[in-house]
Image (cartoon, rainbow, N blue to C red; front, side):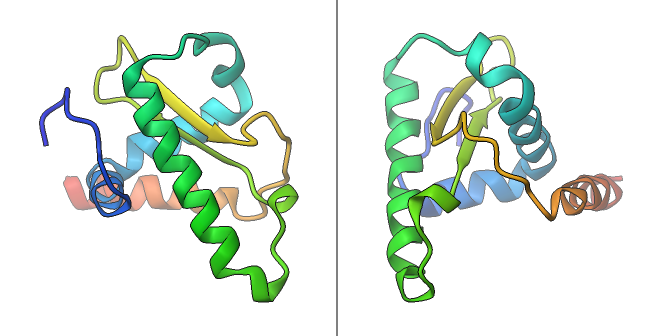
Length: 119
C-alpha cells in the first residue's frame, strides 16, 4: 500500500493497523486526548474515506454486540492516519467523548512489544 493510498475496506484497515500498530495506537491515544479537536478541522476526500471506514466499524461493532446491549454511548473511536506525518488524516465516532479506557496500559505494552519485534 502506497503512502497516498487510503484503505478501502475494513480488511485493508486491519492490515494497515497491524503494520503500523505502534504509531497508530500512540496517535489514537494522543489524538483522543490532545490533538483531534484542534489540529484536524478541514474535511478532505481522504478524511471522508477514513470517516466512512470508522462509521462502518462503529455500525458493525454495535450490531455485533447488540445482544450484549452495547450502545453507541458506550463506544468512542478515533483513528489517525499518520502515513503522511505532515498531513495527518483523522476520523472519529463520538471522538470528543471522554470515556475511561480501562486498558490504556495495554497500548503501551503493545507499542513496546511491536518495537521489540522490529528490533
